[in-house]
Length: 187
Image 1 (cartoon, one colour):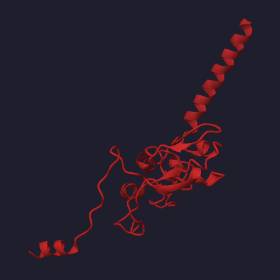
Image 2: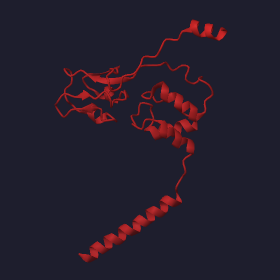
Image 3: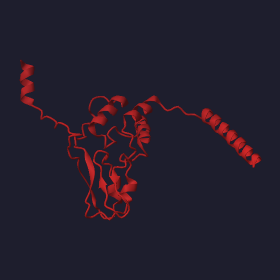
Image 4: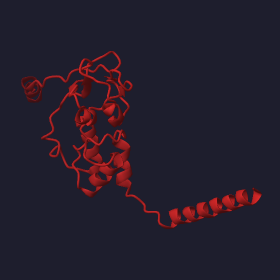
């Protein structure tokens, strides 16, 4: 018994030292811009951008393979922050991106069969429920990534505008007044 414990301890220590040595020898430094982009991205790894997580998108943006508008749950504000890090001049890359309201998933509970397919696919655990029970969405946790909509066999899940509540209420964007700005400049 003691010999087996000693052999397993020696084997574990030896393999651990080899892995530690290999990690130091073959370590590849990521460019600092990848870390900067990854720090700005939401980190939910929802896959709405088409890349395997936020770090994969950060690497693609740093290489110039992905646009700064790829993270749809982040919206225009996130794209503006990313444009500053990736150093895109002006607002040219964002001119085609319209300002949209945040979207979240909504489950029609009378159509839900409780199959748990949406529950398993949600990257942010925004869907609650159990097997053969009705599911619902926690709107504060939902990013609107469409992962649950794709797998629902009864088409009980749709996207809706995120409802305003006291917890996440925001002011509507003001309408630009072109006439007032031009008269102020002239004076």
